[in-house]
Image (cartoon, rainbow, N blue to C red; front, side):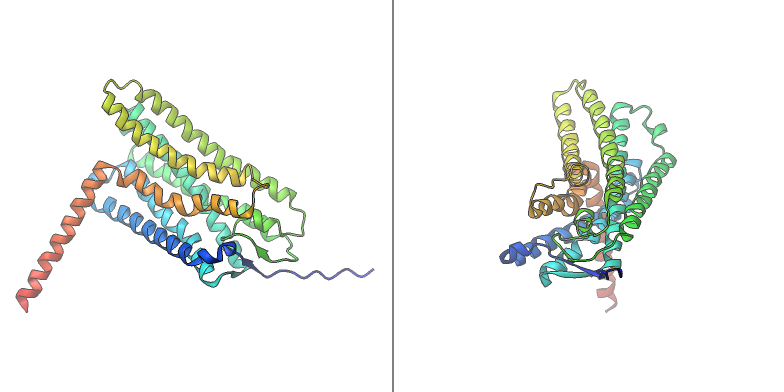
Length: 323
């Protein structure tokens, strides 16, 4: 018997939010606004932390790296989403799909490590303030940041490599708005058990372990806050830590529900909404919660703005005087 010819899929069509055709314009406007705001806020954080010497501390160094990460993380997802909303169905080649998939896993894993590091930084600052300078020195902070980026950089290789070796014989329509793992594997005509197990183990190793370490840090922080004698000081710190923990829970919770405990019984539309939280919403919430609500950062923003406005004013006077 002659072997049967199998046609190989070379490109996929991302359906996006085609079930909401009447809402396409509104969704485009909302996602474009969120994307613009996310990039702008994170750029402001990077510039202000770089300009103000008082913010050259380990805490703000990590925030600077987180802001830099969020710009690239959201830029990996949202531009394709916006293009999909305009074209009402975006075709993407297999190599381009794999490229976005790799960078999504890379930046997502790195964010998990950075969030765990930030929780550890807050734990040291609140629970061991006398040892904080020694335990979180600039050299140690640089090593921890590098430890966050390097594993994230390598995490994306294995699933991308394994998926690139799968066969796809059709259909080629993916009911999602970005190049994600589960909907792509559903279209494969190869055996995907080993690939699923590798992704499951990686998800546990990155998501669950980082989330556990973050929660442990906040448990110690809360127990330390309960010993603060001042009720007002205790409530203020509780509010700050509570907002941090809320954003972390949204990010990890939505990611874990998609990759560790996948909701196969849920509709693709519900899964898209869950995905929006960790691809679009948290990159905006993180800088707002961690930086813009911080008093020292607000003072630094005013100082940098005043300095830039003063320089512009002097230059305008010089131009007017010369003319």
